[in-house]
Amino acid sequence: MAVAKKIADTLTKSSWIRKMFEEGINLKKIHGARNVFDFSLGNPNVEPPPQVKEQLQRIIDEKSPGMHAYMPNAGYPETRAALALQIGLQNGVTLSGEDVVMTCGAGGALNVVLKTLLDPGDEVVIPAPYFVEYRFYVDNAGGETRLVKTNEDFSLDLEAIARAIGPRTKVVLINSPNNPTGRVYDETSLKLLAALLAEKGRHYETDIYLVSDEPYRDISYDVTIPGILKLYRNSIIVSSYSKSLSLPGERIGYIAINPDLSDREAVMGGLILCNRILGFVNAPALMQRLVASLQGVTVDVSEYRRKRDLLCRGLGEMGYRFQIPEGAFYLFAQSPIADDVEFVRILQKHLILAVPGSGFGGPGHFRIAYCVADETITRSLTGFARAIEECRGC
Image (cartoon, rainbow, N blue to C red; front, side):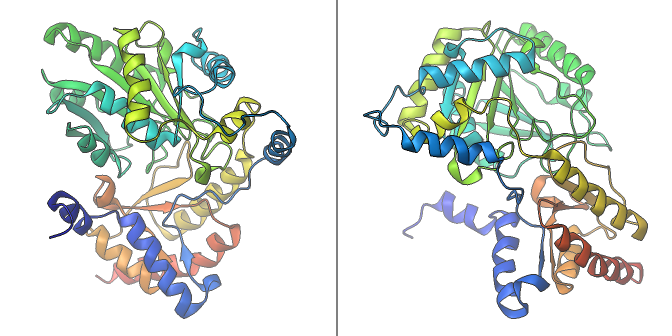
């Protein structure tokens, strides 16, 4: 076999998100794009704020030599300093540019962090439901994933996390606002989690790192997003501008560490080295210059709020059960039947593309990415109604 066995095995279990996205392409060819309601992929449809084009034009018009040359693997010093100021304000701590590494998106950032921290067999504890790629990222670094359940409302189950932590635990990886649930972990829960990790670290005489994946931080509704850097010494943030500025295709993200991190110099050195040797080398030069000038600028979150409310109101009136998302742009609803994969197939008969919750470690649910045109939501409601009615006869 030409393909590595591990990759061949992975291909057979590849992401439901991509499967549904590709199925959507086929259905659109048959029925027309307007008649297929594709909620499969979290591809933001809200356009970047106008400042993005304005700043891009300004940067392009500059005559400075070497604009497209290599720079330090950690990124431009001025970009790192600009991000450090904003991240510090959000987290209630003082950061310098030396605490930030620019990366190729949040996915690149996570791979860099895990490659830096994990020895083969080290464990990463991840609350479920979780972003589908996490297990692959852990495996890339030779680690082992330990999944733990969350509470019924998708808040952190601290007792489950405590049971999952052992002598090989190196990282606890959280995602808030969460993909796929839209849950935001509150400050009380995060303080208790920080105390738990400190206690477990002392017990096992090891450092346990809290890594927070935050690409949806700027997309939240009526809740405050706590800053983890002020809550726990061994904390690391990874994030991107894919959602906050609607730039997913530009692959620009960052890593920010607590300045009091254990073995800070060694960890920073490892992050910079791994950014290079994993093949990322450095974050895109043009995008680094762009985001440095756009700190504090975000998309119009009210557009996502309107879409959330439109969808929740429509599905709620039909009898679907769900937790109203506090952030991000996903609704993780309960399936009307136990088999979430079968229910997604029923939706597909009505030309609606959603993703089974099983793919996120949340069986019995399905995910709807509502970062779509309002018309897609309103015109899909008839199909959602027919699908739940069909299940009532099951």
